[in-house]
Image (cartoon, rainbow, N blue to C red; front, side, top):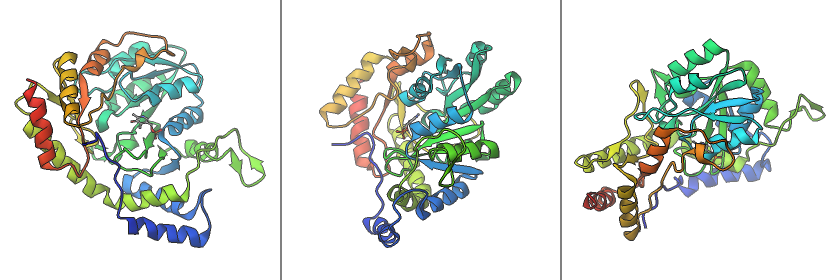
Length: 357
Ligand SMILES: *Cc1c(COP(=O)(O)O)cnc(C)c1O
């Protein structure tokens, strides 16, 4: 069986060394030394001012919405994982769906501007598959209307744009460190900001609102991360560069193997330092996509319709048409993509795909 993704595990002995320290200190969670070190290392690695590691990428989005005190309407993308939309609804705000650009698959700034009204609090956009949004156009719109921007950067760990981390754009960026992501802490995520006031709010919000043992700054939640999770992150972070280089080779091999098909591979925005997070393909039509899914399944190759359905179709949101997102959701498929995928496996997968055309 070839899975669509494979969580990266470091050598067992490396993780075990951290476990020894945890046993010696008997300090398991609550801002332990491994978590503090991971946050410092992440700030350095990503080149950002504040990093708050939390227990998943979804709570990171929810805390971002709370920290900005967003109410009313949030303009968002229908082309993302469900957590982007569900976090908005969970925080009692209303998602307004702006359609995407067909090539980049990120939110279309013109569609965003068309939705802005007096109820708009901000923009929550996703850097899709690690491809950055049109961050400059979105910032211009946000500044013009006096609203803020949060990026769901769950796919964008280590991605760069115009010489800096993509996380340096917008008011807040959120990351997911789930096991299937490029960098992970088994379960986990982070909230990134360069704004000191927001950082102060986020730091108490993720820990019940505590300021010292008996004082509370405001309402908070439990988004704390354990030393076991932080240890996994500390093992993987030094390997990220190498993992991305391996992913790049797999990505380019797929492109080469599939170049004579009508399938469209991911084209990243000019100025992007890509992180090779996913390998999505856009098919000519859904029938062909389903045929390929079935043919690969017969060979025990798992693919994923990521993303499907378009989030404006969820049964707990008010539907508004987003024809480009709905069309691409029907026609996009992610192939197995992880550093250890062998050339022989890629050749087998590609030949099954090519046979359907
Ligand atoms: C994975 C993911 C999330 C959710 O992150 P979790 O850590 O699983 O909660 C949110 N948005 C996007 C785009 C994702 O891919």
